[in-house]
Amino acid sequence: MGEEVTIDGLSIPKVEKFKYLGSIVQQNGEINEDINQCIKVGWQKWKQATGVLCDKRIPVRLKGKLYCTVVRPAVLYGSKCWPIKKSQVQRLIVTEMTMIRWMYGYTRMDRIRNEVIRDLVKMAPIEDKMRETRLRWFGYVERRSVDGPVRRCETINTP
Image (tube, rainbow, N blue to C red):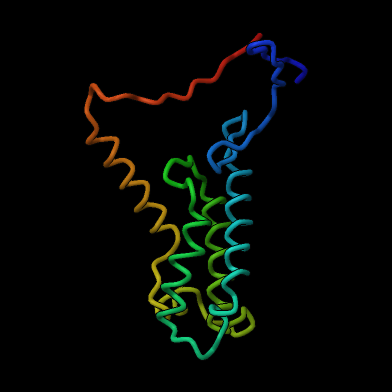
C-alpha cells in the first residue's frame, strides 16, 4: 500500500480491489469478492420478485421462468471468465437451492433431496449454466479473427 500513480497531476492510490463494469477485480487474482457481490445482488433480485416467486397461486413453470430470467443472471454475472474453484461453485449451488426451496415451499426439514426438487421444477443446475456460458464465451474467442483486437489484462509488478 502507500504507492500512488499520478496521471495529469491527479494522484491515484494503489488499492487491493476495485469495481469495474460490475465485477470486483482483486489484486491477488481471486474472485471471492466478486462471487460474494453476485450472491448479494441475486438475493436483492430475489427479494424484489419474492411476491411472485413465493405465491402459491402462481404456476410452477412461471415461477421457474421468472427465476431464470431475473435472479439467475444476476448471480451468474461475469461467470464466463471466472477461474472458479469447487468450493465457490458449491456456494453458488447452496444459494440457488435455498432460493428454489423457498420458491416452492420446501425446507431442509422436509428432507427432500436436491435432485428430486430439481426434477419437480425442471430447472438445470447452476453449475451446468455456468459451464454453458463459459463454453459459449470460448466459442466466441475461438471464432474471432486472428487479426482481431485482443484485450489483455496485464499486472504491473512494482519493486
